[in-house]
Amino acid sequence: MVNMKRFLFALTLFASFVSLNVNAGRNEVTLAMNKGDYVMALKELRRLADTGDTEAQTNIGFLYANGLGVPVDNSLALEWYRKAAAKGNAKALLNLGVMYENGVGVKKDLAQAVSYYEKSSSKGDVGGTSNLGMMYLDGLGVKRDPAKAVALFKEAAQKGDAKAQTNLGFAYLEGVGVAKDDATGIAWIKKAANQGDADSEFNLGAAYEFGKGVAANPTEAVAWYRKAAVQGQPIAQYNLALKLAKGSGAEPNIPEAYMWLSLSAESGYPEAKEKLTFLTSKASIHQVDEGKKLLASWKLRQNSR
Image (cartoon, rainbow, N blue to C red; front, side, top):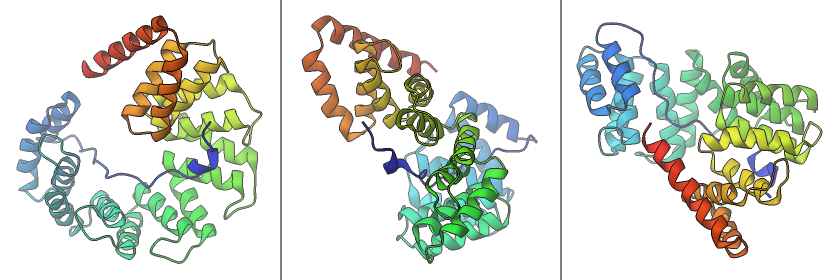
């Protein structure tokens, strides 16, 4: 079973896409994005970007950073983010911070990442504020200051940022930078999970499994793991599979456990591959075959979306 403390705080945000305001040309971008037609979206975004539209410039950077409609090109992503950031776009500043923090397309520079997060946060972007909190929590590019981290998490959490809500919740649960308060901690984690954030759903499931801040409840653990697993959270998929294999919090279901372990392993979670091999050795041929059918059906549904 996964040690909950390994996931005490949520990961730093990935590059963020800007929701375009409804306006001439922007409806076309939104429709194309919703359809997964990134080539058309890029075409419309370029037209808007040529007019100096910083949201469009940021989103072009996002497409290049994530290989949507174009091959991944971090240099071009960086170029477009810089164009938008130079005009003060908060999301572009956030995304530049992420690139500098992780050394993507640029030499890793934690102090520079902090600078970009500070600028993004000063413009009201909750992602920038939340990420800045993580830097202070871990002492990355700045002197470690858990109390300041908590203050930043709280600022972003009160504005509805799910990652900040989870981080704030665990700060209260562990007494990191703030007085320990289990009830407040779980309340914040629930706020995040109720927004549908997969990592937060996983964290709440782990809280119920291990009795962290709440009474242990395997049924609730399974319910929250399942919500996160459906969204592709690999550790939730792994934990859900183990619960189903053991019949803890749900009826035993070896075929479904096989499916979730397979998905977790394919997502790169290292422990899942080993457990899948073990489960396959213990399950009947019929159970494995049923698991493979469930897996194929799941992938077909996902690909048809």
